[in-house]
Each structure stands twice: as structure tokens, then as C-alpha cells.
Length: 102
Image (cartoon, rainbow, N blue to C red; front, side, top):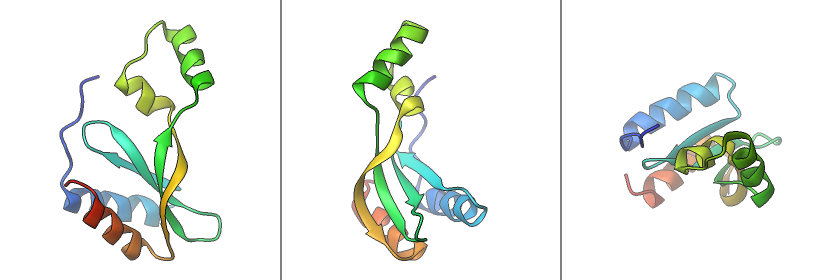
């Protein structure tokens, strides 16, 4: 799989609002490969989390597929380390807009 074209913030914002209001628990984003996600937390707040995988997850993927590429990392990564938290979707989108290289 080739890297995707970078997404303009306005496109991401529309995709995030649609997905999260439609019941999705996370929306992934990044430049050519997704590296972060906005996640709806159990208390209804929102967090930006870094997409990460463990060495064990990488090893298992490699054992099953005999290769590991950036697309593989994106596929097995889970939202883990919290980068920012907010009470509302509007607030988290403003944080992402200010801090991401759109």
C-alpha cells in the first residue's frame, strides 16, 4: 500500500465529526501514514492519543506475514499514549488544528 496523500484539516474535521457523531470510538489521522487518533473516552471526553504498537505485536505480525512496513505499523497500532484531553469535540479539533502540520 502506498502512502496516502496528506489530508487538509477541513477534510479531516468533516470526517472526524461525521464518524464520531455516528458512533465511532476513534478517528485516525496523520500525514502519509496515520500516527494519532482522536478517541472518545469512557466518560465522554475526547483525547488525542498516539498510535503505537508493542514489540510483541510487531513480532507476531512479522511471524504471520514475513514482512513489516509503515503500513503494517499503521494496521496493528492502537491509540495508547495520551497527548491531549478535552471535554468537547470542538476543543480537541482546535488542538489538532493548531498543533498538526496541515
